[in-house]
Image (cartoon, rainbow, N blue to C red):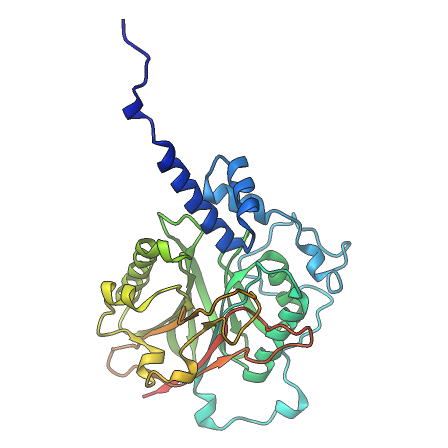
Length: 362
């Protein structure tokens, strides 16, 4: 008769279980901005499965954040949204439309430049989120980027942008919880197709959003992502970087590839993976200027109000120029940080600085 007794050696030790759960609580708290008690509650209810717990957390009704812009009768949080919405919703007021002062015709040189902003907008922090979203729109007016890469979007934030940034086409990298997105200036960039590439081993619902476009007749492959957070997730981050590099390598030679996002990468991790010679880090290519090194800087940005100083270059932009004869070869010519000014509420647009950069044909 077979024995049903499980030996002590088959059971996970109490210390290992506690250690694993403590790590999960720390990661959950870091992603959601909650404390360890809330993290433990959500994880325990969801059988300590990170993705289920995060989904449960983000199911909370966040529509109230933008009540002044979206009365309850106008929209239903349960309505399924399109990944790419060609026509803006009714009743739009475009905060990104050109003002009379900005309608002067740009020089031919400027007109041929491609401009880009990459920004983790911290939609998970719902304090002053309406004003902070308006702050983002004001930067879109100021810089008029052709392409915008966004991370940590939530559904209400996207709905706000669809009504207030009508001059842009918005492509979403997800529908639930928090996700990435891309904005394309309709008068400058022609959308062709998009794809969401899953990261097989992510524990934080992360993926790669890939969008094919044309700009001034040039083929571009645009990619954005939010790599795994927290120092302990270095191995997963490096896996995700390898996916990005592989996609860059596989793109045809007549296509320019641009990747930007909140990578959470440390320099040692990038060195371990290694960037191919065909791919450049835009900040490094432009001389590693100190004033625009740190995109996560708790010394200067107090949105998180943490009791320590942390300065990191989490947000990065990578370029793989087209290599085919006769195809324009884009090269970076400018990079700056954006979002450095406080809003009327006394906070910044995000806890990250955004990156603005421009490219011209070499």
